[in-house]
Length: 234
Image (cartoon, rainbow, N blue to C red; front, top):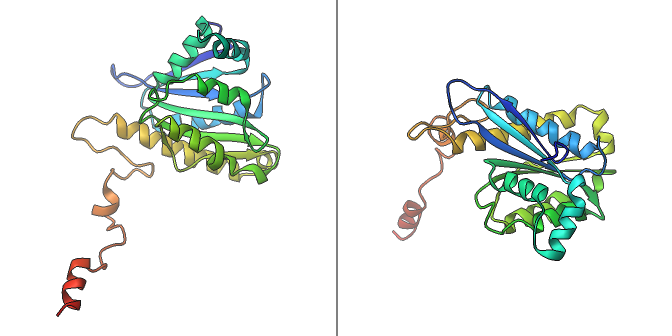
């Protein structure tokens, strides 16, 4: 398959552990688009947060697939490059999906690609949504356009999404948001692939389940509701 459509980067890990697969879909409309740059930064942040765990990053650029996507919508049959891209996404352990913002929504190319994904193929798949745009005024499109799309596809959309407006690239807050989102995605990957009986680590290094057990979760002083009802009836 043409390397312009799907490219793979693998980080070796200890032993012969199966590498985790992270698919990165970008609908950027140029060879060096800000959308692809944002998607790549998120992928690197997730890989860094996995702290040496083997991970295979498979990048899918939609721009070279535009004609194949249109042909599939018209004929119902994917070409070989598009079939490989779809299999990359549906066979991944997690997904980063990035699009430019058009008319306060995702691009038509991005939507058309995911229109071709079977509505059960992404079930329970962790998905990190991201978008770029000229102004921060359209940042809500993550919640109004992208989350509903992947919720319909039964994916697990991460609470943190990343929207990068033009002015964000000159500041430091974007990098912080990228790192936080990457760490959240890495936690989902680690949690899904932790050995049986072994709790996965949170992004801050604490074991899963530590919030309620070790930190108390802030609920220690909350009275039991059944006790309150019993007292009220006395």
